[in-house]
Picture 1 (tube, rainbow, N blue to C red):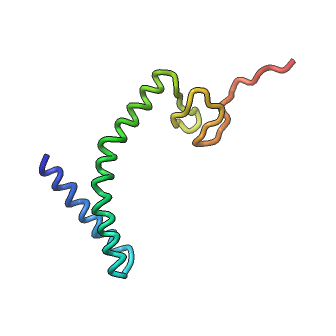
Picture 2: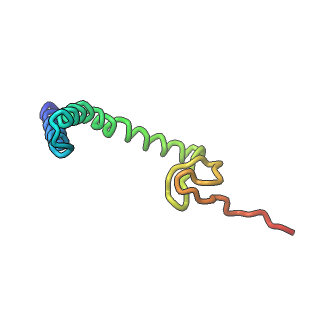
Picture 3: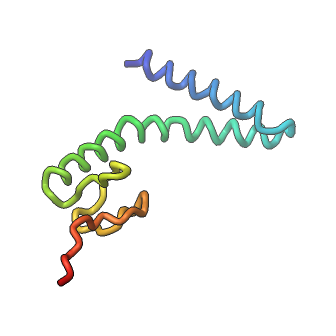
Length: 100
């Protein structure tokens, strides 16, 4: 576990250094980008490892519970009562009432 943490820190420092070197030739801007990347890298890792799996699990539960459904056009999760997909803006009402 310690090795994994060390590897993530090392990768974060390398990414931060690359970002700092490629942003601008101005040393002050490069330093800011380096600090920004070093601080942000652990937050991104935590988000990827903790928040994303929970979000997918919540979507699965809501699909099973009937409160949400998948859009047939873009496959994004939307409210079950939705008439228009908020992601692809397609009309979801397929059964039009018959006119007489």
